[in-house]
Length: 261
Image 1 (tube, one colour):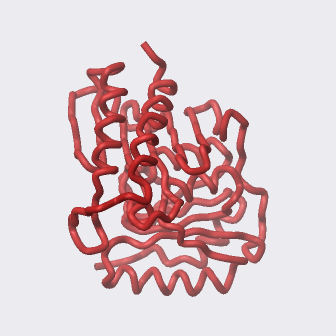
Image 2 (cartoon, rainbow, N blue to C red):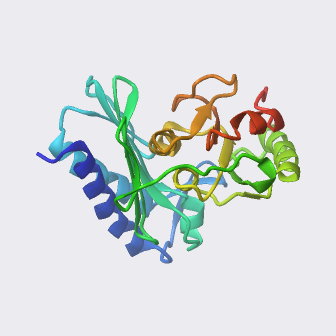
């Protein structure tokens, strides 16, 4: 039997071959909740492959996948899977997307794997064992001044009130920092924060498959994550503020997390 980590890595790399097969060759998309929220055959085949590989090793585990939903086997273990984070980018052949796989035990994330098929960068974190990029230990940045920082954010599919609300945050943050990026893959943004390429990330309405793996990476790399109440974050919170830890309180003062419908 493979270890949890080896199974996740094997699944991510096998699924990446599916994504690369379809990259630049998507003929059809299926819409879910809106014109901005859709799925491709690549998403579906990637998730099927990931679950197939992991389930073969751990048939009694639960699975929570973005495309296939909740497979509840009444286990203490649950795999949280985003088979293609950055579907809009992928459908336009824009090379910023990834595969994200996390494992929780009793609702605590103990393993995170994020793989970028384009750059071949493999991010791995295990609870209490640190975070790594292609086998090399990584750490969050040491920036302490907002004006020296590069941030990232994302926007939910809803183009209504929450978008307008976050646009005001974007304006405020852009005035305070060196730059803001909206690249279109939350999981990859979080991995970049963990290795020091970014210094902070905030976003509303994220889902567990977007964040579970990347959040563990940030925490294991020395960063900090809170929810809209300023409390310890969990993958089912609707708002995330993640930083290198050193600028957390400074950024929290700039961002209004109190969105109300």
